[in-house]
Length: 142
Image (cartoon, rainbow, N blue to C red; front, side, top):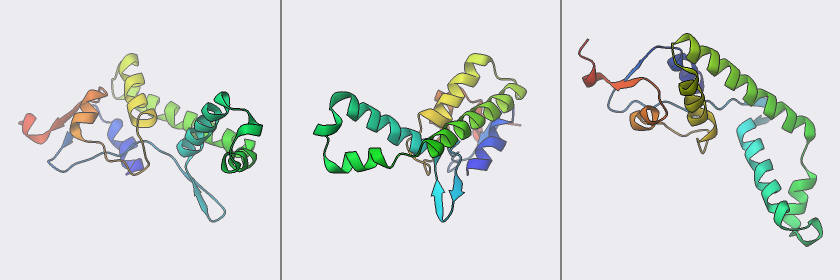
């Protein structure tokens, strides 16, 4: 579904059926036997930053201390770089499909930043709300 989202946004319009869904743009990669999701890594980092902005390390419960100690700067950097690459590529595709700059930004935000989980299925209504030119097949006679 992730690759299909990139193919779909390169079109100047998308026609969907009753049960059609589009996925978020959520790149992932393998690190040994693990599948790594950059968006989840950055989200977890943000949650920890928020937690530790309110409480000192010495006051934090043990699980939070262990999570903070396990943060790997290389993994965080790779996650940021992959998400930026996804944003750049999506922006190029949307621009080529004729979207205006403000639409491009709204669509990228909707497909990357506002999605909640890798497996999320985005409906026609959600896609319209983020400015994608998407239609139900009944809306397009041709």
